[in-house]
Image (tube, rainbow, N blue to C red; front, side, top):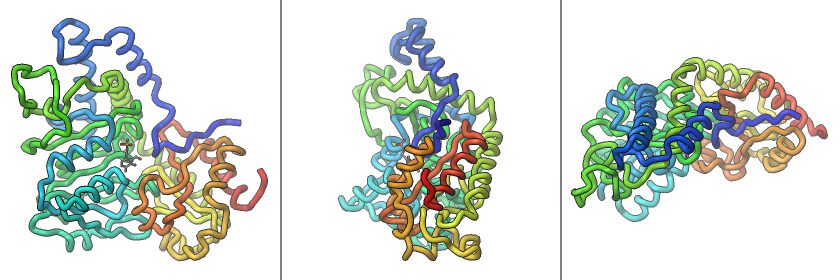
Length: 406
Ligand SMILES: Cc1ncc(COP(=O)(O)O)c(C=O)c1O
């Protein structure tokens, strides 16, 4: 039976072959530490890391690639901003669709008494209420943190509208679910901080990610240490990217990430987006009329990334599904159908379809769409999924919803 991987929101798989090739090349033929020694292998390592930085700069329309520092993942990049930019007394606004990578560090700082925090509400489909956001802004609001697309139900936020609403308050965009899969232009959108992870839509290896910091903003580093530059200086260099890149980086991973970004640039983000939109449309069309399931999110491929959440429970009326989506009116029946754990077991055990169920590290987002505390069954597609994969998933969902075994 064909294995169908629909867990790309957790991490994309498979990767383009160039990613493994780039990593093996680094391991077998380069191996040296970039920016440290001056010998040819160290220079070659430096060239590979720089090519990765340049590729990311092209992808996000960043003029100066040095404004991108590498990190372990988007979580580290986000923490770098929270710890390095915020000061006691600052006010921060975020949204009710954030991942715990945003929520936990911010709640920690709030409970410590360092910051005050407001969470802007979102509707049942996950869309931010921009007017509500405006009402939360204060004189001392120092940062707006926005999840570009929900890892729970795919909802894409209107970054331009948020930028207009917040005026010149700095904007930190969590692009975990959009980088590589959806066009992002930091200049056009007025993004001050862009946090990305390398292993999802960017198609690189796990343990890679990074942070873009707009020119003119200085951050206190999360870590201090060797950089290969200004060795006589007992203070961390104050220039990017060295300011934020203490210690030897995951250069093997960065070699893979660079190859992944080169692949994305060659294919074109628009082509990737079109394919993922076609997969989303096929899935939504295929499951829309299945009895006994509820679909969450925008129910519109143009307004979401290729992630769809469902529960196996009582059917919404046609009207309600079209207008509300997000299971907005059937919460009282939430536990009636197939429990999500059983659904996952059947999808993977009987149909070889790999998905993720539960809260997806985003409990507040599930409260927003009405699926807390049980969560949802999440199907997340990637560039290497095919329409055949989607047909197999639709048939499996239909059988589970109709209580057919297998
Ligand atoms: C929106 C969002 N933010 C942050 C993260 C954390 O990503 P990582 O584990 O790569 O740091 C994820 C991962 O699921 C995510 O979807």
